[in-house]
Image (cartoon, rainbow, N blue to C red; front, side, top):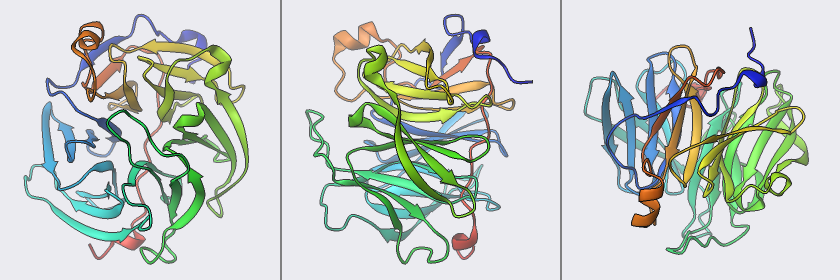
Amino acid sequence: MAVTSGAINYNGASIREVADDVMVHGEGPFWDSENNVLYFVDISQHRVYRFYENRLEHVQLDSEVSFVIPVRGQQGLFVIGLGTTLSSLRWNLNESTNKVVKLTTVDNNKPGNRWNDAKADSNGYLWAGTMGFEDAAGNIPPGRGTLYKLNDTSCFKSLEPVLPGVSVSNGLAWNGDNTRMYYIDSPTKQIAVFNYNPVTASISNRKPFYDFKTDNIPGVPDGMTIDANGDLWIANYDGGQVLHVSGTSAKLLGKLKIPAEKVSSVTFGGPQLDKLYVTTLSRGVTQEKFNEYPMTGKVLEVTGLGVKGIKNNRIREKCFRQL
């Protein structure tokens, strides 16, 4: 039975820290429903993390890592965004060793670019976007990013540039019947919606869906997920909250306050998919802000919301069988 938005418990939900570790740039949470593991990254510290059986473990890499997504039918095999290189990561549960294989590189003519957010669609195709170099003050050159799709007809020979000219390619979500794709280019302060064709895995007819200006929301939209009701949960970077927006009417349904100002991404997880996992940043946060937002930099688990998510999609294995 679907939970109606009126039953959402924003103020009474319980928020706890997954671990004591403080992330510099926590991002990209992925709940692995097959193994009950939470994966995420710390972009600035070049780390892929897993939280498994109450243990937090990580792999140390040699450049910025922006996302980690498992491959279907392949235990311990992931696709990661490493700088502007798409790589595979072999990291089995209960093993400390790992192996990284570089697959392809994008944005070769745009020095300073890096991968940002990524998701797999219902077909298992990877959609992954890039962004320009972010300086110490947080300035990012506009229009230097691209949203790419990994199409397994050509595998790693060339990633298909679906949306060029974006600034900070960010959150992605598809509705339950795969007719819509929601997409965030953060500096626009909007969530856009496309018609999505699940047969061709293609998008068309871009429209603005939800605009932060409508409800005077501070900051920008970052990562995003969708619940079993088809409604969106949007990380509000520099806003200290997660926004709950109707996936049909685009109405703001509610705000989940987070004790961290720089909220970066969200995903549903737990064995019942009734927990919301939230990543945050500590980078550039003053002591004064730490005092105001005591869970800054933590990965958080929110329980008691009264809503369930849907399983995260894995990446289809056709291109990865030999790795």
